[in-house]
Image (cartoon, rainbow, N blue to C red):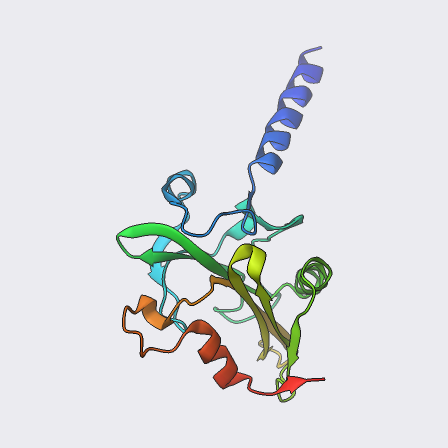
Amino acid sequence: MKYLFLILIGMTVMSCESQTKTDLLALKLDENVSNIVQADQELKKDQDPNLGLHAYATNKPGNYALGGIKLSTYDFPNGNLADHNHLYLFIANKDKPNYLGFNYSSVNQAETKSIIDFLKKTYSGYERRDSKGNGESYFWDVPKLDAWIFVYQGISNDKNDKQFFTTNFILVKKGTPMENSTDPKVMTIKDYYTMMYPDVLK
């Protein structure tokens, strides 16, 4: 009886943990995410190295999901130091934790395929961009979310020179400028993406 009780307790804890995953697509843009930051001790103040957006970041994104897909804390087998999954939660500025979107970088090849398939199925009307042989690249304008979604891949090599994809999944509020700038002359995140991937494939 004692063992049955312990098993039930364990199942309840596991069930609660699975239910507390934060769906990044369900978060409302401009919403204050202080409660999420306080609940996840792994999140640290940071800045996206490519987009310059202020963010909270973690190498342990297992508490989050994209739609029904649970994100994984994952290191690529025999990979280099940077070859792991990473999540940035974008915020309005370093002192104002209002949600602007996310950048989820994944080296989990099976997970990557599942997320791309999910996005294609969920949001129609995407553009496929020419990546010049570096994997795939997609763009969505999603009015109901007031957001842009970008997906692009890069080819990485493990310690044995085996190639694999690092895939970035980015959702950001429409109109968001690079580096959280207030200067109207600064390019938007979409401008930056279009500069990198200018050619739309038919």
